[in-house]
Image 1: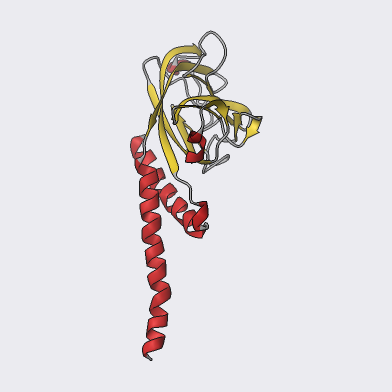
Image 2: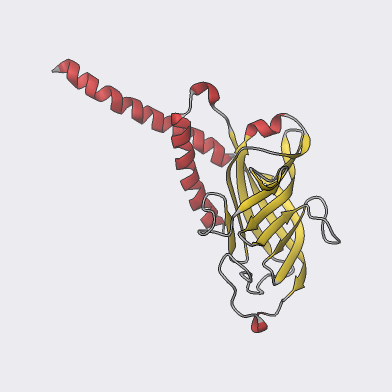
Length: 221
């Protein structure tokens, strides 16, 4: 899982670097990345893999009854640091990247349905929001609200869901056959954003040299 996230970060850094190169200097923003951990402590629905017919990859039944209490699954997201300027709850943000994998189902903002289960965010504006809701305190994201969902609603991941297994810093995930609940941990990971800016600077230097080289040759001739 972490190797897959590394490969996605390489692709994301390249994409972000090209965006930064095309943007005006005054509009530079600092991307901020967080890792998500989903630690399962409760399971409902189908749980016996031996009695579980294969589900659709990234679709209904896609957990294949393979989630279990004690499992931890991971994800990551990258947002514009403007979100962190003021404290608040259920705030919208500019999202550069958002990725979750649970038991073989992937929600990937950069590769939406049909390439992954991701079809949209539920956030401050309900279904179809531009981002999930972020709770910010003291300049850090401390909780998520809303969620991600598939084309038929399932499969989904709800952040801070209601109900007996819900609450702040909790999650609920379902594939229409099995439902998993547990604690949600957020950890800031500054390295991807830092490397994005470094690589963007290197790309700008290379582009400048390529532009200057023909002029230099022309002057010599």
